[in-house]
Structure formats: C-alpha cells, structure tokens
Amino acid sequence: MVKHRCGWCIGDKLYEDYHDNEWGTPIKDDDTLFEFLILETFQAGLSWITILRKRENFRKAFDLFNYKKIAQYDQSKKDLLLQNAGIIRNKLKVNATITNAQLFIKIQEEFGSFSTYIWSFVNNKPIKNKVKNYKDAPSNTNLSDTISKDLKKRGFKFVGSTVVYAFMQAIGMINDHETKCFRYDEV
Image 1 (cartoon, rainbow, N blue to C red):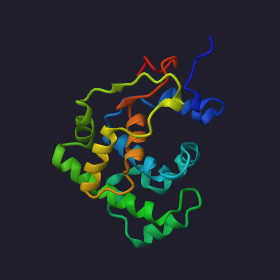
Image 2: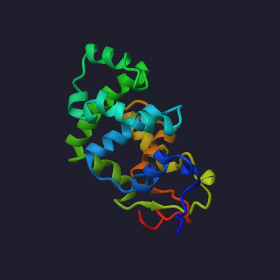
Image 3: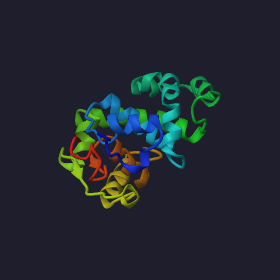
C-alpha cells in the first residue's frame, strides 16, 4: 500500500524521512525544542530543504545544539562558525543563536522549562488544522503573531511570526499535515 504524504515532501528522500518521522510530532524536550528553534531561525529567507541538508553540519558546529555551551560562545567561536562552509554563514543569525541560547535559559529559569513556556500558548494540546492541500496552510496566524511578539519582547532574534509558525508546525504545536496524509491522525 502506498502511503499518502503531504505534497511538500514528495520526491526527496531526506524530506520524506523528515516528514514521516519528525515534522508535526509533538516535542516537549527542551534540547530538541532548542534545536528546532535554531534551525528555523537559520531557515528564515531560505528553503527548509537547504537547512535539512546542512543539519548534521549545524549539529557539529553548534556543539549538538547544547544551548548552555552556545550561550557562552566568544568571538573566536563566532569567527570559526562564520568560516564554516557547512552551515549558513550569516553573522546576524550566528549572533542571534548565541543571544537566543542565553534567553532560552532565562525562560527555563522563569517557567521551569522552555517546553512549559511554549506549550502554554496552546494549553499543552496541539491544534489540529484541516489542511487539504499544503499550499493552503497559513504561513502565520494570530497565535504565531502573539508568540513572536512575546519572544521579541524577551529579546529573541529572528523569531518573526512566519518563523514561529514554522517552528510550531515542526514541533507539533500545530498539526498541518494534509488531512489525507498518513501522519495526520498519527500525530
């Protein structure tokens, strides 16, 4: 039996694997939430497949997304990152990653975990949309606007509403799998 997948991932094995095993699965683990937050900020203005193809390079370059280490990065580490052809070498995004790591820790201190903070926006229950065609899914919503504003107020960078919405989709806060997709009822 052929599995029906969301149209955006068809034809690329890496995309299909990501879709089948990760995208839209509710994540509550702070380490994984941080990884997705950083990957989504680097994705701003680029395609997600570009980020997926560089994901392992990002993991190596950013100490497996260890936000405690990243929060301590100094100028020499920034310089190394900006010379690393395996990642997106954008100075503003590299600086934002360090700032966001520091602020991620502050949110943990305030709420007990980043997960508690971010999932509180949906009362710890994913929103299940009824997307028939992935092209009809929104790129942002009032909820992503609210979360974006709150993150920005706290000092986070590269967390516009569209980035936040993509993050919410990736971590399963929003189920935007197409209704005919085999993952729609799984997540």
